[in-house]
Length: 185
Image 1 (spheres, rainbow, N blue to C red):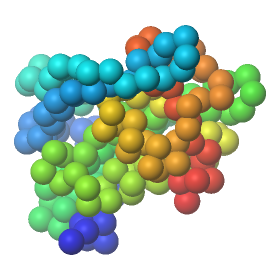
Image 2 (cartoon, rainbow, N blue to C red):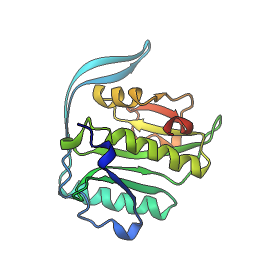
Image 3 (spheres, rainbow, N blue to C red):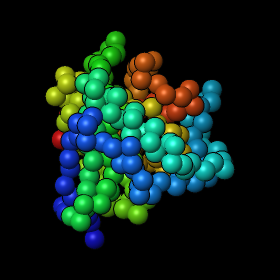
Image 4 (spheres, rainbow, N blue to C red):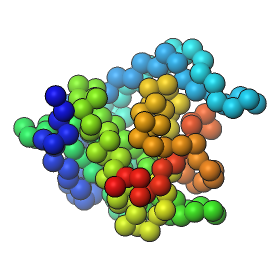
């Protein structure tokens, strides 16, 4: 069963994201394989990484999202009919790039309990629509290089970035990807 058609998507203002916005959001990412850049290109290697958010990180993320909204970006969240947060994304308000006009996908997370129901797809489509309204031709993402994360983005049509947009790179180990904003429609 897909939740896709039962979701409502809300755009937030900075004043509508409280510090406890993510208090019940389930995020537990166990990375057993990750992509690593080598001289030959990208290769998968074994890993043992656990990514979880403690209470302080959840409050920091809420503040980060408020800051991005205040600087012209947006936060969109998908909610179940009962009002439970199922996923969210954040797009920055700045455009950059030499060869194309890029917007930056800063965050995209789906609650662990609701993965594989089309929520990530819906949020990425909404992020592309927003980026297109900003005037961006492409959406840039600096993605955690876990096998699952990259597989999701590739399944959505993302490819390795044609241009490295340095202001948008989060971590030098990230897999830098892009999607044209028209692909999000």
